[in-house]
Image (cartoon, rainbow, N blue to C red; front, side, top):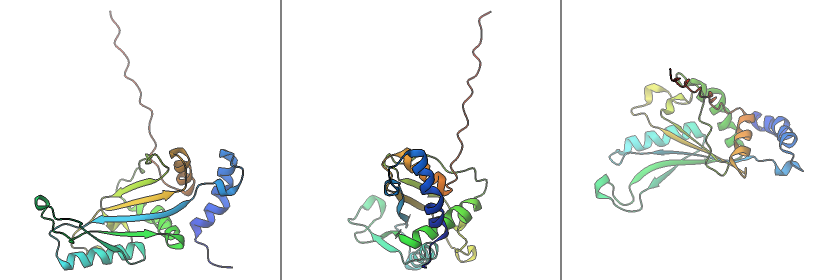
Amino acid sequence: MSYVPSLKKIYLEQVVPELVKTRGYKNKHQVPSITKINLNTGIDADADKNQITDIARDMALIAGQKPILNKSRKAIANFKLKENQIVGCSVTLRGHAMWEFFYRLLAVALPAIRDFRGVGSKLDGQGNYNLGIADFTIFPEITVENVKKTMGLDITIVTTATNDDEGRELLKLLGMPFRRIEPQVAAPKPTAA
């Protein structure tokens, strides 16, 4: 028997039967799943080579695979940007690496955020979820002593869900800690005396 990541095992054994039961799918292949996770970060236009290699190293530690360095397509003088200058770093995770990263994000990284109250529940209209993290040092692979400049991280979770409700339910069953929206209590209207 080959290795199956623990979160994928939860997906196959618990999430799929639950979604088939609640959503009324005719077979298990209609159940939405996660296809890939994209990680992106921007790099300052005035960053030197050492800073670029540090960011690429940190991204590789977080993702578990080598990132792609993204270059600018054209020069923009107002932003001090030259053509073919490195402006970002990205990784696309699929398969086992995707499931392992998603598990580490849910179980270790998100709970490490100070005063964490959950993530927003808004999806992009097509069942995909975008999450922005202000400080990448929440991941345990990063040692804070080696970090010269903190960077943000954009995480996009791409699903096969056809709408936001399916995608939200899939992510919620996988353990995504969505923020509870408290019902707004209207202030009592003043009565005329």
